[in-house]
Image (spheres, rainbow, N blue to C red):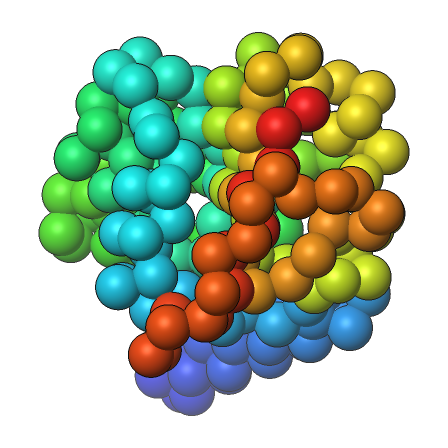
Length: 175
């Protein structure tokens, strides 16, 4: 009897996570697609992160960008993740693998990002176009934005790194 109730509760929790994830995938920023590790390292290299830089990863997924920004470049990195299931995955990775960085569960649109030195994003083009207004309104002059695979609205990139092997295009912007 107790085992049956526990099983039912676990199933309901899983259904709630998956339903929320599906809703966020459709109406939020897009599905969770982990950035390949070679691309993560290439993007962080092009970001030209200095020790102590504030790095924000929008749609941080499992937290790989923030982990390597802290570990390899000694940045102050924060990731924003809307999907509770994916956020839980990121927190598990932090705990299990001692990954670094701060993960915030929630919509980055509700957070002040004006102190950012670097913004990293791997989102769908429609979402990125919506975020452009926040970037232009809040980010200080000189803030770098790196978008993996997709262009950001009508922003003009300073540089586009072409696709090479399994690493898609990288768009580099400066506000």
